[in-house]
Image (tube, rainbow, N blue to C red):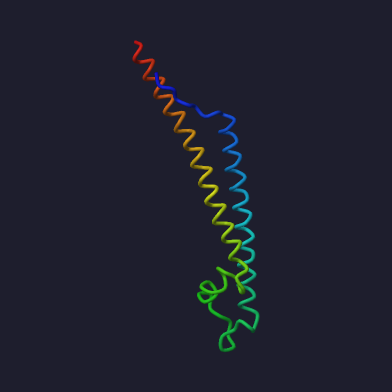
Length: 118
């Protein structure tokens, strides 16, 4: 008889809570990034030191230069943290799906055992 390990439901609840926590942190960081991006766009369009030939830069130029990294790279660490949170969130989600799959395997295995007794 094969022994199938079934995940503990408390562990599954903890995995769900971890996914929620990581998603919350990820979304909060995304909001912070969007606020900073908006400030960067506003500054680039209104501060004369960013003007090209005495004109505000185009949005395409702002998007490809300032908006992603910031004026002095200040957004890079936030984007790295966001990438890390996304990876951790996906890992936690995949771990939970693995637990669900283990339950499905156990369910199939026990059904097959019952069918073989008939």
